[in-house]
Amino acid sequence: MGTPRGITNKNPGNIRPGSEPWKGQIAIDDHNFCVFDTEVDGLRALAKQLLAYHDHHGLTTIRQYIDRWAPPVENDTGHYVSDVCARCMSGPDDAYDLHHAPDLDLIMKAIVHHEQGQQPYTDAQFDEAIADAYA
Image 1 (spheres, rainbow, N blue to C red):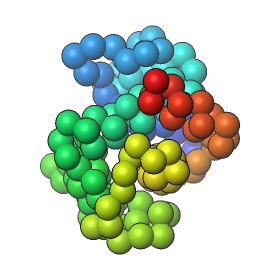
Image 2 (image 1 turned 90 degrees about the horizontal axis):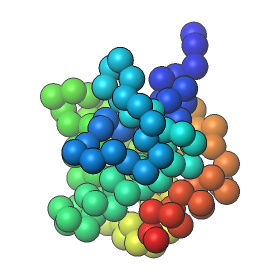
Image 3 (image 1 turned 180 degrees about the vertical axis):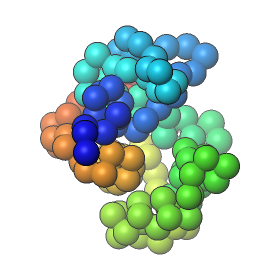
Image 4 (image 1 turned 45 degrees about the horizontal axis):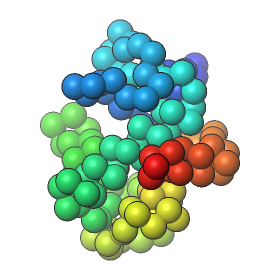
């Protein structure tokens, strides 16, 4: 089994392009996923997307985040929610404040592990990406 697409693309959240390119987005691959210049920029995009869900859509729970992130028309959302909850050691309807960096960090790490089947990034990479997303 080869390297997961998201790791190859430096896009650990498997983000698709939006109306404007993300910071550090250098391409779009043949399956319509963003390709980033660095892992930190890919993690930053994940953080920014989650913050947008929180700030602009009023989402606060893992169930709400994942239902929007990985809708049931494309994914086994129930399994995804269960996996992220297990990794966060919380329930699907527990509230999170994504402007509290440890909450954002925890959910990001769980999403990366679910999307990639592993979580190969350092705490320093997550810290840098989160700080940049908040800036």
